[in-house]
Length: 366
Ligand SMILES: [Mg+2]
Image (cartoon, rainbow, N blue to C red; front, side, top):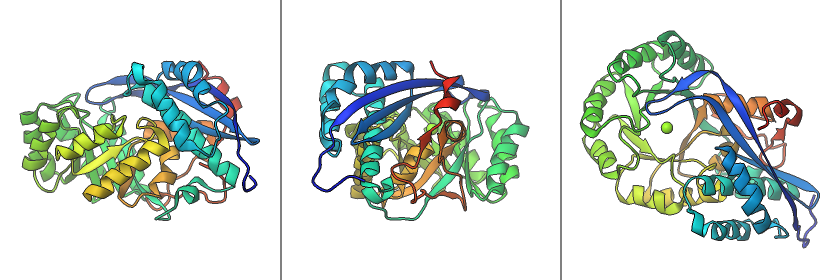
């Protein structure tokens, strides 16, 4: 463990990327994919190594290697905020949203993991916990799935004790109500969420919100593009009161989230620490939510979010996304298993509690 009064200069930043095929073709309302790329950042100081990752593109790895690594070299690993600002300054001319912020996020997460390891603390204790566990919802239900597969996956999560599930809609709008009906049949009284990934226009989304509300849907995510803040506000004002409007997964900086909140665009704000500037950025979003009495929902990458989600008062729940849960169990020892509809950080392990399974991952390296 680190001794009081010592600094710990960052001695190395390593990056690697892995391409993992999906277990079957996947699609949502506006995208299809057959693989997911995980970009891993490893930051060393004081004899410890912190790990962080993002789901992105290989370009994100190049970005970390060629630009960010030298910006934090020799910084004191305890000064995460200083490292974070050095990285943000370095990308000024390249643009903040997108690859830049995903790269910063992976490194920031590694810095938090590293600091917690240097102090011999689980990350949730370093940040300061407010709850034992983070409630989750099972998320998948891809539009590429047959109705049988959709029902099996959603029903499976409910059978495991997860009382909330989310399915994708929007690829085949005329079939959606039938698919939602099948999902409802498979999950009984559990909460049902739908995510259109911005596939609809305002009027179409409004009409569908009436149909889904009648099917007991509680959450309509990105019914219209999340860039259409006015459209989200129209949905929030005019959709049935029982349905909450959610968005925010493409937020890369605090100004984005503030604009979304200023527009009154959502009932629940979503944020993704692997995009919005890491644990540091995610904690900032939590404070914005606190100032608005706005619930926050963590987006994907459950192994990254479990700890900060237990440290933020406005948390509603965390997305237990099929792809990421699968990949994190494949590539990390210590990936958490749901219990009682929640993820509980393992407080016996330092940092995020994850060990990268380098040998298992090697065959996916790109
Ligand atoms: Mg979504």
